[in-house]
Amino acid sequence: MSNDILLYVGAIIPIFWGIAHIFPTNSVLKDFGDISDDNKNILKMEWLNESLTLVFIGILIILVTFLGDSTSYIAQIVYWLSALMLVAMAVLSLMTGFKVDFLPFKLCPLIFGVSAIVVILGAIL
Image (tube, rainbow, N blue to C red; front, side, top):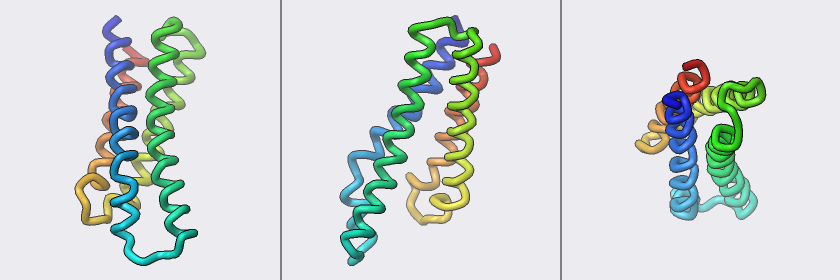
């Protein structure tokens, strides 16, 4: 049961961070200044893509945990692949967004990494 709590916490973190990404989308785009509409659309797509990916990972973990046995083979695959994706996103953010002089970008690797660790702990405990 305590492992389920860890899994839920590890899932809620990316859900909240993903939702938090959605609200400032337009102001983030404005910070890029005068760029073409195509570039604005690409940036908006990628920004929202990360948001939706984070929300999807969190919801997937919650559903697998709530609807099934968190120790099952399939659940374990979902947890480990979700954690792997969060680690990949953390590394990507560390190599790119962490270099930006804007605090929320610097928080992404930490948030993704912590979430991945909590999910892994929930999967193995």
